[in-house]
Image 1 (cartoon, rainbow, N blue to C red):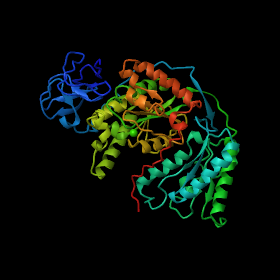
Image 2: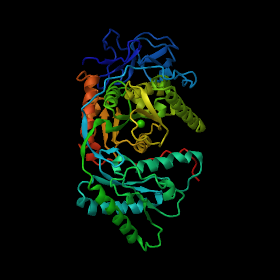
Image 3: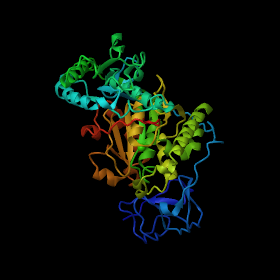
Length: 519
Ligand code: CA
């Protein structure tokens, strides 16, 4: 077996083992170092003799200091490294890095659903919003009937989904931080994949009343019909005295849904420029390959998308926190750099309130996958954002302004479900998800394109992974080649090609980020 060693930067004093199953003790590595012990796949090996307290450098960055002397050829795992303190948020370089403007990429299109407000959907879905969890059971029964009885009669509509959540009552709804879950739910209801057809199922007595969730004026933005009567909020209230018995509630929901389905059914795909893509990128179940294969390919694709005029959002505060100086430097203006700092500071305080810090992020699977700590994970994670300037910053649950384009930092927790939910609220119409350990993640509201970081995972999960980034480690494709492949795949999926998660109907729950107290 030919040993594969992946070293990210010239100055790095560790590299990761690329071979499936790892490499045995005694293996001579490219460059002449001999392994002193067995090193698992994706784990680090020291390339030089490191004294105790030496900086361990990967991605050109100190990811920690050695707790004991480590001779060249040792397995450098998380128990041998002390994590550095988080970078201070003062004195950061603010909008200092000015990459040369990349040439626009013209002529790329996809087939999408144009909405009345100019936004574009990649799917044609009826979403039924809920104000409170109490209605979820009734809505589920209604959804089954809508799918079985109505959807076959409206063939242009892809699906009907319930926007279910655990918020709405039993919460401190006037707490300052309650703004986050409320605007998240509001903005998801307005996602471009739903065609501006907003329908709400309410219980009646809950704290989150329909007009608080969607105040007058908030839904005028995306109606699929030019008919302005569609802007009145359509609410089915289960406690409405007109409802006598369970069956009448179901009947109300089904009947009202049909009005929206009839309008959505008139939507037709049309050719639109690639600039209408709003791509959310995130990773989950990461390993040390994430930052070497899949994420760099996603980063290359991010640059292509932004050059094509599209929007790309990257997120996950705890996974960018340790690279904040690189990101504030890349902000297009000092104001945007400051907005990033404020998101980091807010999250530092949020974590401190729970008596943890960013190191609470890494999972046992991350560590088994060779990621020693959050510093190393963050360096591999931010690669997804490519190299273009950061042209916008969103707080959790905020929505892109009309026409807002380019690379956007949308602040979210790193939790896969919360991040995906907040990116949907921001207006995402396509999701890219990289994974090394493997997760079957999928969303009902938006296609999810999954990219494996390792060929072994891509082979075993052949009908779950849409693209194999492991080919980069195997030497079968370059980062550029895979980045272009992903770019073309995204245009196809946006045009209607179904991802594996869609084919299997794999739908993770929406999870609202509620930093406010419950009562
Ligand atoms: Ca994640």
